[in-house]
Length: 332
Image 1 (cartoon, rainbow, N blue to C red):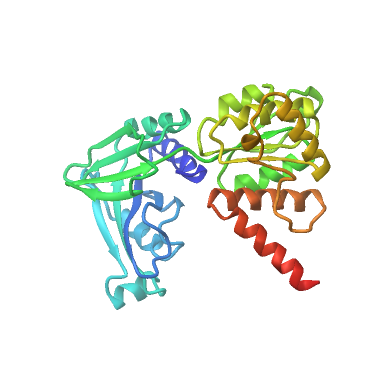
Image 2: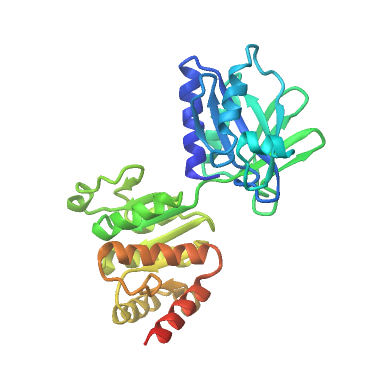
């Protein structure tokens, strides 16, 4: 589940509340070079309005035309197959040769939608089950998200697993944090900024982020609660950065980074060890944070940080750094 999907849920509620018919479309199976993966979602109104994507634009127009023909409520979910024949591929625009199968549901009440929103906002992974024979929807928290398929059909039910967005906590609301926040939002992170300094907090105006006056250690406890969370300490003030780092080192964050030179990183290590942190925990800190891209402007440094964050998320941080180092050696 990404930030985009949370937006889809909010739009679905708004459209339904405004008296419009709303349809939820899910990619369930793909073959070949399908443009969107299984689990991709789209919401549509009966007037053709839509948000999200199930094909990158290949079949959305056909779905909109079909939805307009539905005069009666769609009590039972319906399947739609695309790209199954050459003729259909040409008509719907699936020139890539891929095939996909989508399930179309009409939202007849908001019970499951609001339940889904509540689970995600509480930081819970969840499971949505749709009865294919009658359209009944069940929502429940799901501790098995990490190992279960994202979407599959089982014993007459469509089963979809989702999780809250990945979370990035920034310590400090300075100029660098602004650039990091913009990049992270584009990558669907939930961005929280810990800024107890009133003069900095008053200047923060990045949309779609959350600003908290909590001290950094309290913010880590509140927001970096599992392995989907990350921390970047950006104030260059040990009184703030060290608080957050010290708290995060004992937790499950998948990435912990800090602004600063190699000299300041060495001093930070000494301070954290003196506070009682273990050497192996302190070694988790990426400092200076960011892949060595060579840029020096604030936006370039932010890009390097988010690039390293992305590489770490996908288990490629070391490989990315080595590759960049090799490119630099080859260019000298």
